[in-house]
Length: 205
Ligand code: GRF
Image (cartoon, rainbow, N blue to C red):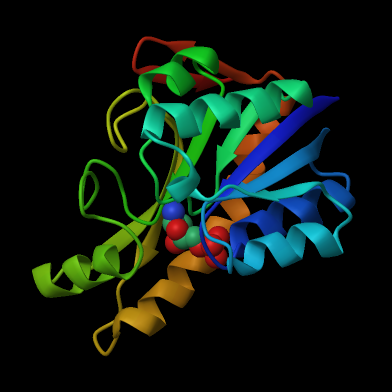
C-alpha cells in the first residue's frame, strides 16, 4: 500500500476527497502526513479529524525556501512517503524537492492546462480569467509536477461547461466538484501503478 504525503494551504476539500475515497476503498494508499504552510488552513483540521498526522510548518522559521523544503523532505522521508499530492498548495517547490520525489508529485489545477496556468494563476484568479476571456469551456487538470509551474506531464483532464450567468463563485463550485472526482481517480491510478510516463505523455494501462 502506497504511503501518501499531502501538502495544503487552504480549506482542503481536495484532501477531504482523498480521505473519503481512501475510506471507501477506491485508493490503495494511506495518507501518512498532511503539511500546511498556513497555520489556519482548515485542511489541517480535516486531517486531524481523520486521525492523520498533521504539521504546520511556518515559512518564517526557515531562512530560505530551500531550507523549508529540506524540512519537508525530512518529514516525508521519516514517514516513508512514496507519493506527494499538492492539494491547493500555494508555495513553489524547490529543485531539491522535485528531484527527491521525481515523477512522484501530483498537482491539481482548476483549468485545462496549458490555458490559464503558470505564475499568478491560482484559486479564484483562474476562474476570473476564464470568465473575462469569455470561454465556453474550462476544466480541471491533474498533472505530475516538474521544475516549472503547472508544466509537468498531464495525467487526467476533464472539461467543465461555463454557463452564461456564471460568476467566479458559481464556476469555482462547478469546477471543484470535478476536482473532487479526478484527483482521487489519478491518485488511485498511481497507487495501482497504472500511470505510464513516456516523455511528456502519460498512458493509463
Ligand atoms: C483547488 O481549486 C485546486 O484546484 C487549487 O487550489 C484549490 C484547493 O482547494 N490547486 P481546497 O483547499 O482543496 O478546497
